[in-house]
Image (cartoon, rainbow, N blue to C red; front, side, top):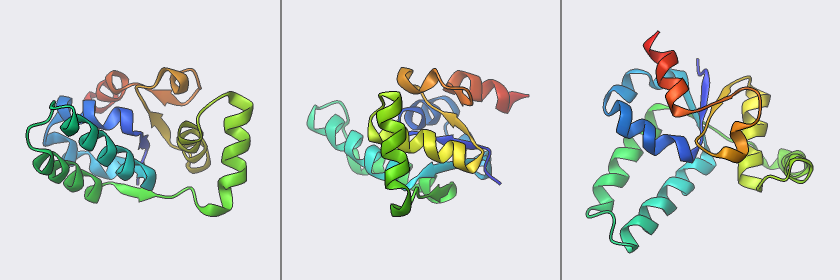
Length: 134
């Protein structure tokens, strides 16, 4: 069962840090369906900027990882609640969706986003890797 919700800002550094070992821990991880689009957009952007030589290979790596983690959806029924959280906390709708989902599912949110790191129940990639090593 998943214990951690990975946001898009945490996924890439986690892949760099753990490599294929990330798959060994995949049952512990969940990601929002939104993460797929955020990762795809980041790969596209890095490719357009000339920082990624083979975007298809990079996409294949992330596809494999995202196939192995539990992908969850906030659901259209929660749009009003996520928007309310975003407005109340001054977050983007994307960030509020991650925070909302982590709270609703009882998961620790793994993020490198400073806007989200100020909330209880959020941890950085460094903190996650330390927890995994215990």
